[in-house]
Length: 203
Ligand SMILES: Nc1ncnc2c1ncn2[C@@H]1O[C@H](COP(=O)(O)OP(=O)(O)OP(=O)(O)O)[C@@H](O)[C@H]1O
Ligand SMILES: O=C(O)c1ccc[n+]([C@@H]2O[C@H](COP(=O)([O-])O)[C@@H](O)[C@H]2O)c1
Picture 1 (cartoon, rainbow, N blue to C red):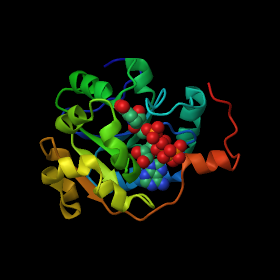
Picture 2 (spheres, rainbow, N blue to C red):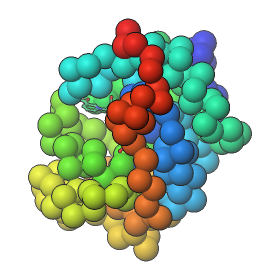
Picture 3 (cartoon, rainbow, N blue to C red):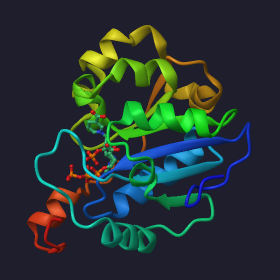
């Protein structure tokens, strides 16, 4: 295994929660616990992003975001990682392709809040992500309708797995996606930054 990459056995399922985590907050921890339960995952890896390709503003330094993330979640099933920095990838399509090659036999599931499904069609090579790994979408305040009516949701509507069958997602052949209605937590990094509770200058 590459240094700094978490260990996982072939056949196990790993949810990938990519994010700026600028800062990490209890909403991230909440959807992680819900994803472990609802999608029957063995592990979740937080992939602290070197920088979202769609965001102009650079995030706070990686080391600060990683340290803060480890304070927000303390669960043996969850790893906080800087995998994309180690791989040298930024676009999720590239990250997912590389992880598939490094971890043959591991069942990866991409995790995201409903706000990201609404924008998913703007991501680079988004169809290649859809076609490569299953996607688990977690409800977020304000984004339920726009996510389910989004271009990605409409184009891939025949590949949607009902929330009742969410346990089958990690074993499904891509394309497959599942929206789960989890209890809503109205926290966001942008609100925390706006309140001045994360006053780290951007790198
Ligand atoms: N409260 C929440 N409920 C559901 N999903 C969430 C929540 N907070 C974050 N997420 C999801 O976690 C992932 C990483 O989020 P990110 O690090 O961008 O935090 P954020 O709060 O969305 O930040 P920002 O407000 O700056 O956009 C995204 O898929 C996002 O949709
Ligand atoms: O690959 C892309 O084009 C792309 C565009 C927007 C967001 N993403 C990824 O989506 C995840 C959530 O991003 P963010 O900044 O909303 O936390 C993070 O892993 C980003 O790298 C990826």
